[in-house]
Each structure stands twice: as C-alpha cells, then as structure tokens.
Length: 626
Image (tube, rainbow, N blue to C red; front, side):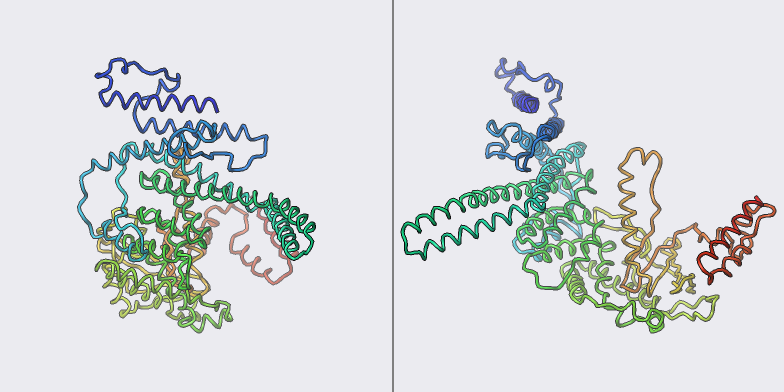
C-alpha cells in the first residue's frame, strides 16, 4: 500500500512538472526547470500522457492485488476493496481512505488522462462527409424509439489513434476492477449466510414492531416504558443494519455505473477488448432486465456505441423480443438497438427477426407427410408475443430507415418466403434414388429480383462503415434441385452470383431444426475468436472451420455447403462401394468391408451379447489376418 501511494505521488508530480514545462513555466522561472524529487520508478517514466495513464492504471492493478493479498487471511466485505471517499471520487487521492481509496483513484485518474488525449485527437480530425447511415440519422431513430435520449449521441465508431490500444487498456482496467467489485457485492447477497442473516433481521424487526404495538395498547405506564425500552433495544441493530445495507447498495450502484461508463469508453476507443466487453455488457443487461433504472442506464450506454459491436450477439438479443406489456423499459431499449442494427447491418440482423416472425409457420404450413411421420411431435405452442414483437420491430425499422433499408427488408422477406416454399416441396420417398426435380420458375422469378440481398449462404464480413458495397447477389441458378440423404431428404440448391462464383446450399425442413446448428456455429466462431487472441494458437494456426447456418422458421433453414468435402461413409467405402479407403488399405487375407457390413446387418435384431460376439469375431479374424 505504501508503494502504491509513493508511486502515485511520483506520477502526479511528474505529470505536473511536464505540464508546467509545456506551458513555458521553465523559461519564465528557471528554478522550476529542476525536476522535483521523484520516486526512482517514476523518474524512468516518459512524459507521454498515454504512457502516464498506462502506468497509473498498472499501479492501480498492483494496488488491488496487494490489497487482496493483505486481506486474504481475514474476512472482509467487498466494500472494503476499492471504496472511495468524496475526495478520491473527484479524481484526487484520499488521505483518510488509505490504500483502498488510492486504488480506484489511480485508475480513475488514468482513465481521465486517456480520455483527455482521445478528446484532443478527435477534435483535430476533419469532419467526415455525411453518409446514408450517418450518426445523425441513427441518433434520430434512437430518439424516436427512446424518448429522452440524447439526439446528438454518436452511432458510428471513430477511428482510433495510434495510442488507442493503450487507452483501451486503461478504460478496460478501470471497468473490470469496478465490475469485479460490483459482482462480489451481488454474489454476497445471494449466499446462504446473507439470506439467513436477512431472515433473522426480519424476525427481529417483527419482534420489535410487536413490542411497540403492545406498548401502545397497555394501560400500565411502567409496562409501557419497559416494552418501549425492549423495542428500542431490539430495533436498534436492525435500523443500523438497514442504514449500512443502504450505503452498500449505493456503493454497488456506483461500481456498476463506473463499470458501464468505462466499458463504453473502451468500446469507443478501439477494438482491443470488443469480445470481452460486449459479452459482459449484454450479460449484465439481461440479468437486470427487470430493473427500470438499469434499463435506462444501459440504454444511455448503447445509444453512444456503434451497432456493429453487438452483431455477434444478435441472435441472443432477438430471442428476447416480445410484444407483452413492459413497464421496465427493457423492450424499448432492445427495440432501439435492434432497429439500428437492422438499418446499419441488415444482412446480419434481419434473418433472426424473420425467423421469429415465422414462428407460427409450422402450424400453418407443415407438410402432412411430416406430421404423419413424427406423430405430432413437432407441434408445440407458438409464442404469439414473439411473433407479433418481431413483426412490429420490422415495421418500425422499415418506417424509420431509409428507402434503401425498406427495399432491403422487403426483398429479404421475399427471399425468406421463397426458401420456406422450397423447403415444403414434397419428396417422393418411394423412389430411393431421389431423382432431381426442376427448380420452380415462379419461385426463381421472385428470388432473382432481390438484387439488394446478399446470397444467404455467403459469409459477409461486418462492415463498420455500414456501406456493404458490391455484395454478391443471386444472378442465376441451376435448373434442377437435387436431394441429399436423410430422413427428411434436404434439398441441394446451386446459385451463381454476378461474378460467376458458385454458391451451393442445403435447405432443410421438418424435424431438422437449424436453430440448434446456428447456435453451435456461433459457439465455434467464438472459439475461433478466442484462439485468434492467443499467440501460441496463432503460431500453430489453430481454428475450427465454420459454415453459415440461417434459420428461416422453426421448420425451415439453410446451411452453407462446405466445398471440397465428402461424407465419411463415402470416403471409407466409396460412392459405388468399391473404391474407398477400406478397399485401398485392405491387406491380403483381411475381411472385406462389405462382408463385415453384411454380418453386422444380420446381427442387428439379435441381443446385445450376440452383437458383441459378432463384433469380436470379425475384429479377431481381421487382426489375425493382418
């Protein structure tokens, strides 16, 4: 703790000396040119403001670790770490609060220095030309959806200076520290000990209230005096505890406010911590969705952040859309964020909303043959509030967006409906060869008019500028629809974009719920993002190959066809069961894969013990002939 205070004194003295030198104080007063007595560590620090902010933030982290080590052997409440007095909250160092006050004060001062540098850099930038999705248009949409918001709040990310990485670290360090203290205080209220203590205080309060009630109705002055005294003694610790808990709750709110504010500044400064901050912000918001004040606070944060930061979580946020009466303000904040995402990034935000809007499609258009196969298992209650909420949100986006946005939403709706119709084409399952069928020309005529919709299976990168120029759209298609193997016989489509590139797609229907596939692909994408941040993983080029999955409804969806691949069975036995890996690597005297398959098939209806004996017999013969 003494080291932290000494380093803070040295850094602040160094900063003051640097400012005085820059202002010409050294030339006016030669005695000021001599450096003040500084700590040895601070004397090595360069006078760069962002480097100074980084050093201050690092000193705060050291102080936090020192506090945790010091308090490790003693029971302590979360309020004892990082709490500040009024002096430290204003940016100064609290002399009375000790090292606990200095930790948050150091980080706060570091964030203040970094914020000043970024503000100076942004002020020196030339004004950017207006675009179709300008900050003013997006802010105006937010003001219509959320009355009382700041119409001048920026919606597009400002290009970061060279030192934005340092600023991101400073803001993230302060936000993570405050968030950790906030999480500790929230976790403390959910412990069994806290619940038992609260219950005991409630019982004690009831006892004190009963004593007061008895004192009011008694006729004896002496008895009344005794009962009042007992009630005072009983309620005194209860009142003291309520006051302490009120102060702790205010401190909890303060930590949450510091975390939100600096998470926002971290996202505005650059992209270094986008993955951690966006996921944490959305998680905090969803956990507090029933709190009106929290929703208002998160709404103010979201309105100052670019929408593309939240694109990775569009499915999770869209799943919360509802048309139910909401007095907490959660749906208003959610609608504002999703509408801005639809207007700025339609190719990433529209499909989750259309999938919700088509939530009742399964009851209306489910093919009868699928119902007979599944015995009604696919039938379940439709959430009409989600369907209506998604419909209203799409209408709001079309009404508030530009003409191009309205055309994109309309064409995307046509494409989704066309895919749903294709998924419902009946298949003659009596024909085991599943001969190709002609592509319905009526459906294709509608699809080829959608020149503002990117090919659905194309993995379009997120464009922070929201321009999305030269997107590949459907220019032509194969005249036939082929089928893949499986219970529901998914359909294989082939489209060519305007550049002649082939895009092969798999359209599923029935019990093949593509929403689960979409969640898994999102998870794999998150794994790849984490691997990309690890130096050793990058050296080894670790990653998972992902493909695009787009659900259109609970019973229809699209999967990108992964090129240059084949089914495992085709690799092992070959397309005609003659030239596969089994045949190529089979040694003289080994049992062939076809003979093994026949013996396995013959044993399918036998008992488990008999099937195991067949397996062991085949394996034993095969191993002995090797």
